[in-house]
Image (cartoon, rainbow, N blue to C red; front, top):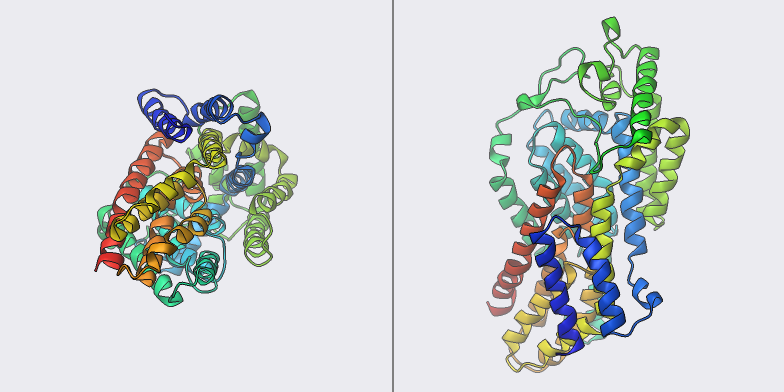
Length: 478
């Protein structure tokens, strides 16, 4: 058996073990990277660690740390209330607002993970507060980001157009852009219908009520509380939580947010975030600073192209200086198990790339004789690899492999194939092993994360298997 087949079989075995046993797949993947890298590929430790996604790790830590603080001090609840008012109380419109915002951000040049990192925590916070299906909300954010991702001035669009032009193939930039937007919009519409969107259309935001920040719990739900994170808190985290309550109560009393008889956050069962959420007269100073930080995050990462992980941690530090005890709890709320899973699998995929396994698979597919079969298999390779690795790298590596049969007068339309490859290689970013999927997983609130992870994995697998066939039929065969 070749080294490439061994690497692929080990990857499949990882999924089997992680499915059968309650073991974090990231741990299995790190061990797999070590064994395959040293015993099969002959790599040294430095070569194996070269595949560690340091940028992704920092992004996930920074974003979850920053938004944990925003959740704890009530900023997310405040933003949610503003969103409800902005759409006139039409809760069903919020998922589409999130879709449109992320599509706009990527359409004007934002990196897809950056747009998702900014919007997903707010969207999932809204879903938790108003009983919107979190899977639907998170997926619509991702599909929105991918829908706008191929405009002529976007990152994906620029890379794809450059690769195609260098290969000497004809391309229609607007065709690729509108195909991506149309497919992702259609998928989002189906998700909206399947996951309760029609019921949401008959719902309005709850009426104002005293003591709950102007809102009552909708549809029998409890008021949103600070995210608890996947781990059990130790003494330090418990101490931080209690001190956080005292800090919030004092802050609330200073601005008249606490009702009669000192009805502070903890007493009503709303948790630490409740004190900030109960403000009827607007935001606290800390919430204003937090929102300013979130706006700065968007500006610095989208306009000045600074690393989102470093920027998020820097803003989180500034907020921490205002309330050191709150940040102790926020550190505990960072989604460490999910981060372990993502970076572990990414490290193993990095070993496979260093071994040349990914290129070997692409070359093997491209050597087949039937042009239509080659096109379909390349779309599958693009979808499967992109579900675990960089979509940008997939677009840059697989399109050149298709050049020979696209130029050979085989009847395969280059413009249609490029559009199909663009969609197949990016729509699978809903996978929890991709950056976008990982950000949505890390942003989910008040749910069983293991269940949510399985839902993302199942949906990601369905999209990976179905999307290539659908776009192949629509844009290559027809």
